Length: 439
Image (cartoon, rainbow, N blue to C red):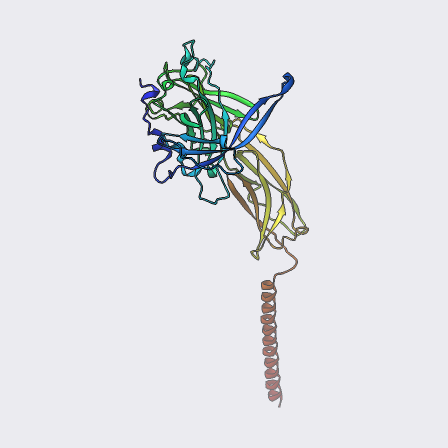
């Protein structure tokens, strides 16, 4: 088995900086956040925020003396060497003058052993290495448009400002949508500095799920002993060969279910070090619509009846139901949302909801009928279902009907006149013949 020190230094460069994804390394504006213990032994700790500047480079070389901006203290300007080039991703380096900028926060970090069962074997030794006696920072960054999230642990010799990335964890799936039942890949990549003495003692990976305050362990793997934790969610797995060879710690869910929607945290442990990235998964399934009764019964002017539309099998919960009517003239108009029922949840976690509409052909001015449509607007897309409404015995004829009736009347009038003239003419001829006969 290969330990983490054998992971190729360029693995994350290939994964994160493929094609044109990388550009020149940026100068990152960051918030330096730290807590100060309150005076008098109080429990509350004040949090201070200071602007800081991170000059990123991939090759270590002496820092050039640069004048810090007026709103940044010189002590908060740092030089960060990132051999993997992860921090040089283009989403962290917007064009000059851009209003949108990456999010960045840096905090002091205290190396300490982990007590978790799958990470504690990394620090079997009771003594801490001298290597830990340094200044350590934890930095969390998010690129533009959610393209990338990075968490790094950096080390600098005490009282210096030249840091080197020792551990970085990245994800390119900050926000993911998946259809119900489909496979899901939540990206997580790790890189450890091969020159660090901490990278040769193994690693551990943990995936956790959180949703509305509820959390659970999805999967945990001890890379040092090649063991999985006793608790593992069904259908969740890792590419263990890719993890050891390329630092690919991505979580694979074989079949997306509604209960999988929520936050996922990928945490990577080295001896005394830990870094994590968070991503959101949303399982989306559009509704299926059905209208009852279908087809609609024939209606007469003034008749009232109820039509119902049921939307089923959708997730997440948010849904807008409404009705539309399209007359024989081709014009559409809304009929409102009708009478909505509450949501019902099925065994698979999907939801259903219904709406009922009272149709009065006279009150709603439905004319000679048309098309009644149920419209469902959902995150998964807009769905429509239609039925035809026929109104018979309509009292007010249309223009076409009126013209036809006028035509028929003219024809009948002409026919009557013709018959009348024929009868009159025939009668005159018979009278003339009788008169001749009498004479």
